[in-house]
Every structure is written in C-alpha cells, then in structure tokens.
Image 1 (cartoon, rainbow, N blue to C red):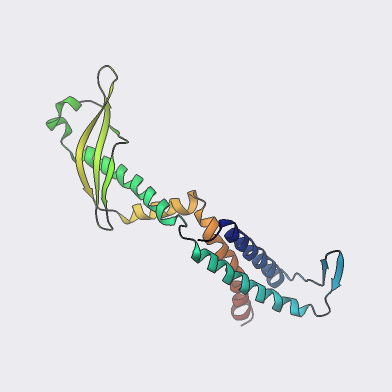
Image 2: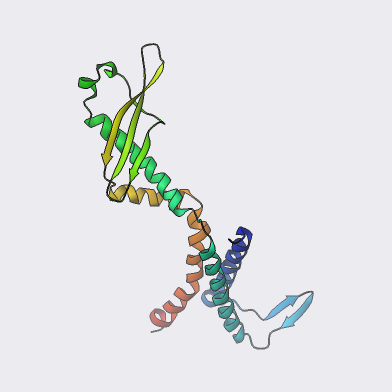
Length: 202
C-alpha cells in the first residue's frame, strides 16, 4: 500500500509538466534560460527543450499511472453504491406508499403523513433487482413518532437512476478532480499536437 502523499506528489508533477508542455506547444512559450541555485543557465538550442518536455511528460504520466493503479481504494465504487442506495430507497418509498393498500389494510395510518424512516435498509442489490426493507415513520394524535414496516419492496434499478448516481459522484464529490482530471490535463498536449498535425495543417 502506497503513501497517499507520494501519489499527490506524482499528480502534481504530472499536472505541472502537462501545463508547461501545453503552454509551449499551444501558445508558443519559449524557455531560453533556466535559473538553477542562483546561477543562470543559457540554453543554446531551445528546440531541444520541447524534446525534454515531452520525455518528462511521458515519464510523469507513467509514474502517476503506477501510483494511481497501486491505490487500493479510490472511493468511486463506495460513493456510487452509497448514492444508489439513497436513490433506490427513495424510489422504493414512493412505490411502497403508492402501491400498498395502506388505507384499506392499515386503518391506523388513515390520514397520516408518512415519512421515510432511517430504519429502512437495503436487503439485496444486484444489477437487475434491489430489495428494500421499507419502514415509514408517522406521528399519532399527540405527536409521538411511530415506525411501521411496509415489508420488502422489490424494485429494478433504472438507467436514469444509475446516471444520477454517477453524476453525483462526478460533480458532488472530490473523486473526479482528484483522480480523473489529471488524465484530462495530461491528454491536452497530445490532443493539441494531433489537431495541429492532422486538422490545422493537414
């Protein structure tokens, strides 16, 4: 198991070298001298700087990928599963309250506002079927809260629910910017190079 600080360092190096390379390739930035330990080094052949930058870019990508691969738990599956559980429980609540004959079978709940209980649990979760042990809360005439189990609700996951869960992971958690965005930044110089060679100057 690697130290997370080592991974962060590799990510920073990849982002920095990718942005420098993009600046040189896309915006024509030139590096003619380097200040090292208070000494100014004049570069006689600036064209070779590009070669060095591409080599450094490839090296830091390999390093980042290796550290990324060695991380045991990046959190994507956990965050996705947690959001899916939340969405599927809400869907089961809506289905259970609407389809269950509450007023006919349970006259004690007549006219009561039913709320989703925190006691509701996911029993089974597969790609084709989720089984939710649904529990609702309601208040009696003296405002005392009670819980009532509506039994197990079988509900298939919908594609839109899965999309909502992944959208939440991408936009509402740090995982995308922490682990995926560096790959996007890394790809920017090569995308620009391909565009320059085959589109702008075919």
